[in-house]
Length: 288
Length: 332
Image (cartoon, rainbow over all chains, first blue to last red; front, side, top):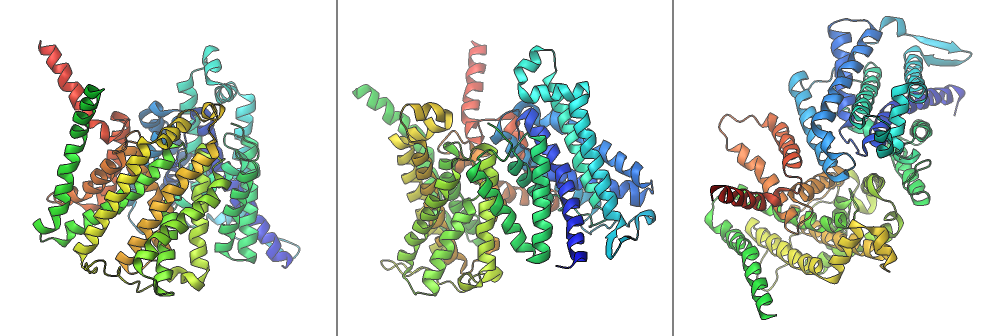
């Protein structure tokens, strides 16, 4: 493996790890507070990518404004979904599972009918075009910016959860809902906030990936599946677990697919997942 | 005692009479219609019923498995290889397919069934995909992504020759009836009660001396046995199988059939399959119907059932009865 190939795989690993983290942190936040698994999370990633395409490529807003607008729109959509569909099923795995499957069908088909079947491409903003050379290593500017923005979002979420009052309230609900309610914390409020933030993060991931890949109505399935592997590896409901899991999956995927090819990389990720679960049935940092 | 038995038998007649009518309809169906389409639709429902009714056994022990189609595929590949490579008789290859799936389930079950809840769901998803990738990657003997072709029809059995669509229809119907009888007997047996006990409180079940692990593996392997049988049947029905026939997405739909039909009732999966698979057929007959919006209607239907009928579609008669009762008492 040449140093060029190594650094490229490294950057790709960090990037896909951070993107997976954004998706996984949303899932784990929703799981921690509402004890449901939103299998339709990938559709919000997909809608976020379409939102970014709409604001950036069609209306020609600038990069950051489009990102923020896409996150806000999808965040609000997430709150509406939580209020109307998930609220009665908190803590109930089976019905919330069926609700998510229904949501996947509705959201995916709606996107197909509204945006059409053709792939949409989002051209890279001109400031981000080109490469940075460090010695003999060439790195794409665009990917470095994706890394910076997603890392900033992860840090912001961490600060929000550990410093701000609503963030602390959410963690209290995640630890013990009843005790938190007795202290006057609104569980409904915390659930809506969790879903809103979670979906906004998924939209951010979709928006950041839109210029690198392409956008169509089926792009949500694969990243969300990998994000599931991330949260299960790290332990559901654990913030640090998602970060460790995200980097693990990102690096294994990037290095194994560079060296051994795509299908083997996918098999390796699933294999590691099953092995970790056999040794620790609740993931690396999770608990019952 | 006698009175109790009588009440039981009346109750039995009440439950089984609609089933009896359904059975008569299903037996006569291919003779009543000229349309191969409806025969095919029903035939597809038969094996989906076996798959979902057997998956319900696993769900009943509290484990949400997304690998059921991988076990069906195991049966299909086993039978297809035995038929094409070793020239076995279909009636030997059929149970062999079931047994191979059950064997795989025992091995994987002891490893994975310690995992619970959403963790188990994702782990079985991963396992199912790994099994599928093995079929893709190993050209010998599985044929890679193009699969196995020209799988023969079942050998003649007691003068019945298999090949026509109606012969497969009756074979599928018999398979479904046999599977339902075995699963029903199991449900009402001591084992069935133990499975439910594990689902509702597995710590408690363990403290009263039930070896949870053995029971969970038992349920998992029985369910996989039926999935394997269905797989062997499917392989000879289609004459062709490939890794794309056994995806996680299809396993997810089985869970939808079980839960939307009603996981609490034995008949839930049957009701779920017939109504949810019937829905697109009914929609197709609406004039000016645009098939593109079908997933929106279908998804909306799933959500509506969960919101307004959390016990599943199987609860509709009870709901109607309760409503009539209320109206009657209001009138008095």
